[in-house]
Image (cartoon, rainbow, N blue to C red; front, top):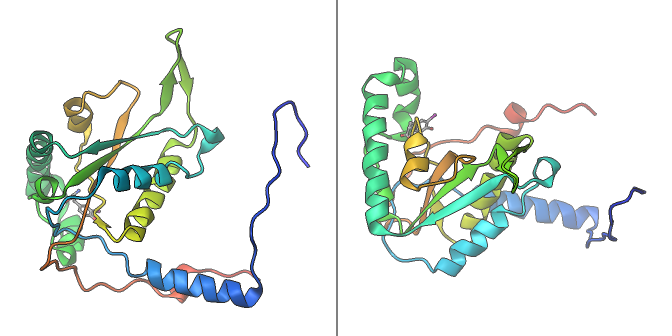
Length: 224
Ligand code: IYR
């Protein structure tokens, strides 16, 4: 058992029989497999409390040295969404119009993406996930965070599953470069935009590409 100068508390949790675990893990897989990245959003409002619960779920993710090196900007203001859309489209026009390689564009073709990002206006909420490479201390010196991208990636995964659990949909959007976002949101200098994630209900006529996920054989290498 760990023994040092810092307090530790007892930890237990409910556990399951092998049969129960198989059943639970199987049904969780089937449920998780229903999640899709959706680009066609409804403008139907979603309560702020739902979004706050989703973001606090994201914030339960593990992080390097428990630094929790993230901030979630939660945006519903229409003028701000329009500004973000305009700025994102400005960059994406350049990306799709020459910055991305032919190979990249070919790989994206099945997803049906282009430079237009109307979902930023339409979705009721935009979450901008910010990573924090360091913290500013009161005396003005910097204190490092650790495994920042890994930590914020984990939190973003938790966020997407919490969205799915609430019966909503999301899109992990990566306008590139993303520096314009930190400026538009007036974020402190220790924050860098990581992902822009619209969240809401799918549009009534929403469509998603007909994609297959890799098989067990393709993604798992077993050493037993
Ligand atoms: N960032 C662009 C392009 C894009 C890149 C990848 I890799 C995707 O999986 C999807 C899109 C955009 O968001 O359109």
